[in-house]
Amino acid sequence: MASNNQTSQKLKLSYFDLAGRAEPIRIALTSTGVSFEEVRYSFAEWPAVKPTTPMGQLPILEVGSTPIVQAQPILQYVGKLAKIYPTDDALAALQIDEMQWIVDDITNKYFGFQFESEEKKAELGKTFGEETVPAWFAKVEKLLASRGQTDYAVGSSLTTADLAIWNTHKILTGRDMPAKERDEQVAKEFKKYPTLVKIEQNVANHKMVKDYYATVSQIALTGAGNSKAKRRRPRVCCCFGPRMPEVKIQQNVANHKMVKDYYAPVSQTALTYKLSYFDLAGRAEPIRIALTGAGVSFEEVRYSFAEWPAVKPTTPYGQLPIFEVGGTPIVQAQPILKYAGTLAKIYPTDDSLSALQVDEMQWIADDIINKYFGFQFEPEEKKAELGKTFVEETVPAWFAKVENLLASRGQTDYAVGSSLSTADLAIWNAHKILTGRDMPAKERDEQVAEEFKKYPTLVKIEQNVANHEMVKAYYTAKAS
Image (cartoon, rainbow, N blue to C red; front, side):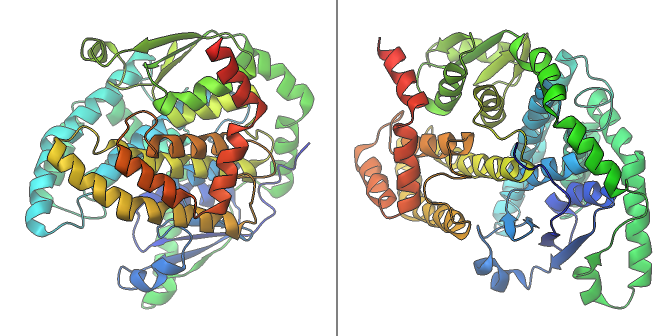
């Protein structure tokens, strides 16, 4: 069995000197009692630091010598350490993953206009406050209500999904980048959604959160007058966390074959599955491959674009794919792929660091796919303009950063480890999408395909996925 020792390696968290995307990570890490170093950069320092980072972004969590660059996978990893992310309930984990992905979507939209010119920022911020935020609150409230959730996002106790929702509320109401009128408008709108309000209150009043802020206040008092120390202070082991022998015993029990075999029939194989998507490959193709490779029976529904306007209002979140697990609909592609990968045994459930790297890579792949689909439905003139920038600037930069990240970890054949994982399927599918499999544009597709050839690790991963028995078997069955 692969190692699942989560706490023996040195941890270092780097972010800006504000709460931002890192605050839930800090809260969860502090609660564990695990010692971790923290580095906080000012905005003035960032331009010089940015080129030295793996993907040109923060936060970064270094686990030993391995840097991880996506906030939500990092939160899931530290959530396992803090016992607020389930390791023995695949459906609960799927719902938490989904909610963190949903939360990240609105956070990305918020930060997307923060660094525009003042005039454009005001214009985009007005639309965001008046249209985007109310629609998002309503959809999330509806989704939670459909599952009977009233106090927490998943289950009956605090999880990383709740921390993510709480932190998003703080971000949207101006904790980090205040804009008085818009912040007040969003805060007033938020009060209309009782489940979201209750979650926010429960997180704010949770012992984990209150203990964290008590600790931060104490550090601020003792470090007063030394701005550099406050920004780059090492975080020491906190007295209220669990002792390490207890953590190790809990990990060993949770990962014992007897325990995992007991939970597997309950959480995975005894359920019915239904996958709904458009009648094309798109975001759903890796999910189809993994489910077919797992040998599980699943119903599939494919909608034409003509059918979609009538179907959309009937869906939980107004988007596809939707994956129903025993009647519970899940609405985010990458968490669904992770769950399907667990069934197909191509997602590492017994190695937390590998799982963290797989999650990170799926998030990275999703980021470029979102940018691609972001201009596909614009008017032709604007689509051509945005598509040109995407191909000439965005795609080469993304290829180069991912190639460098993989190279820094010594990966040559697969994204993580030495065999196929959902990370490889995500990269392979991103390549297929970017080169026009679903929405062809000949000149742009050829340009992307030619650029892709410059990156040997990405090329090798694409080839290994295409030639993998699971993928070949899927397309053979599909053709018959």
